[in-house]
Length: 618
Image 1 (cartoon, rainbow, N blue to C red):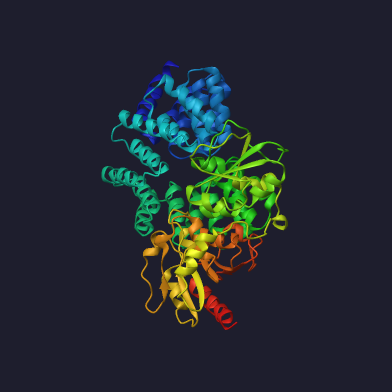
Image 2 (image 1 turned 90 degrees about the vertical axis):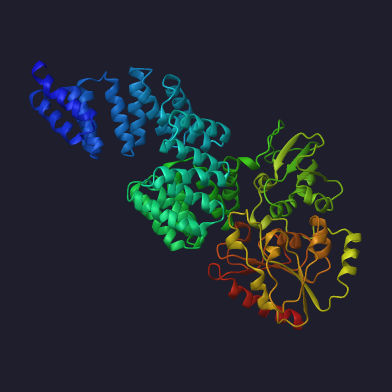
């Protein structure tokens, strides 16, 4: 070895100075004289990997291990190359071999944690990353990985604490700032996240990370138009080295209705990294927006192939199955929402009910999502009561009075207020799964909620001077809804109905869309200031002849009251409206007007106009 020491030392010097090509040449010089030198083979493999030739690197390091199986560093280096090459299972095996040989091998522990994180096995990843940090507390890469693991597990406070700790280690580090920004995004603190990513752009103007993160923040703030140039810049800087800018650009395109552009971005991201579950899921969503359902399902299944417990893929797959009326499979997959939407989950010491005999027991049925969902699924409370249980129904304060009208034997309590004692509980939207509901067995009898007689009389007097057919309208949904831009129309579009003779229009619109200007010549009565809860709205609707609404709680309320309601449905509809039908098994008095082209409400309004002419003439 003495005759090889000079070339070997020269090779190591080149390597430590980052001169990888020179280091490679020097290692090869050593191996010409000593072809079975395991250290030279190992480091040659590392140098090849650092120059992007990973398959070649794997071969050299494997040769080193065959000569010296007990070299923990060799196994660790092989694990790192496998991980960089996308061979995650191989990376896990090699990293475990390194730890078996040297239990305190910090680098191998980190590789293990990071590989498990990429596989979505977050609890295991957490254990290895924490073990790595217990030995080397200021390891930036491990802190970065652990912050992401906590974020993926929904443990936002812990993720935020790790992000701050990372910035203490490296106050202006790109990784620290990026992790902090990502954590703020996950906490829905979009304004603060935008400020952090702007600081990344200021400090690292040639990095794609800041532009990409600021673009995400702008989309989440509802400022998608500002995100487009940011994503373009991030893609220019990342070029073909990272799939994330392409993925996020595609996500923004979906929000803007640019589906073809979104698909192009997702496909580019998958060219860079084929095993990226999030991209496959987003690609499925893009195909779903075009109603290419087979392609959408294939994309979700590919996401689950690479990450079997991917929450987003399971959730979106459930919606696709339900949209096609496959309730048995769909509602089973729908249970994955509890991992995706942790903020909706309520914890109880009592067991959760899934359909077993509860005769003589008291059950709490509790709301979990929007007002429309609660109105729609409250119908199942009576079926549960018919199985011999005493039923308590928990819901938002705004629905208590309305839902109390269903049956005086069902006790209704406001969410967050003390509940009477109960034995078991069940979320409202889990009831179809627990009850084995299919499309053909939906309890569609209406009305199942009722307007208060005194309130009905009050509104009858208020509307007595309105002549002709009285039609209530609602044109916009909650801006916080993830698909609000697709499902909402505008008051200006309803203005296309202004020439209908014999009709008087009554607003049922609450929230921000109510502030839209009334089109000239559109005779609209707005008394929604007097609507304090859904019971008030029910009493007003009871005095109307028809309700026309986009897909929002007002449509569900009118349907549950048994009132004639025309619901305007987007091209790629919410699952509950199913496909290719003008009626709804949920509400027998409902008629569906579906978009025939994405976001084309004008054509829908043309058909509504023609249907109204027939109605008014009758």
